[in-house]
Amino acid sequence: MSDTLTRLAATIAARRSADPETSWTAKLLAKGPEKAAEKFGEEAIEAVIEAVRGDRERLTAEAADVLFHLLVMLESRGVALGDVLAELDRREGTSGLAEKAGRKT
Image (tube, rainbow, N blue to C red):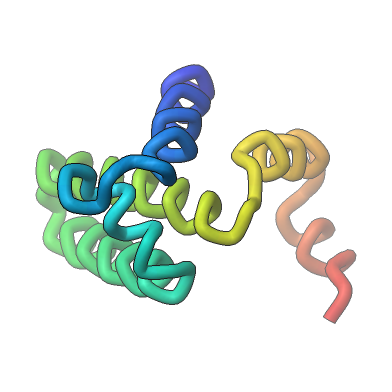
């Protein structure tokens, strides 16, 4: 799975320099991080709606949109997927309750 996400993140990074008239990703990145975050939020809400409805097929499609737009949002702020994956690796094996309690507020 991370290979797919890694390839997708690389494609998104490459599209930063593409023509916004011919690339949705380039167009979204050209509008700035705020627009990328807004689009990610919209897709996340759509995924929640499908999860509540229980439509597995639609939830799968919306989840793919969420992952794509998360990667666009990360790219817009210069956050590497590798950094996110490293953070997940760091948390592996730690109770969610313990991890949350250890966060700085």
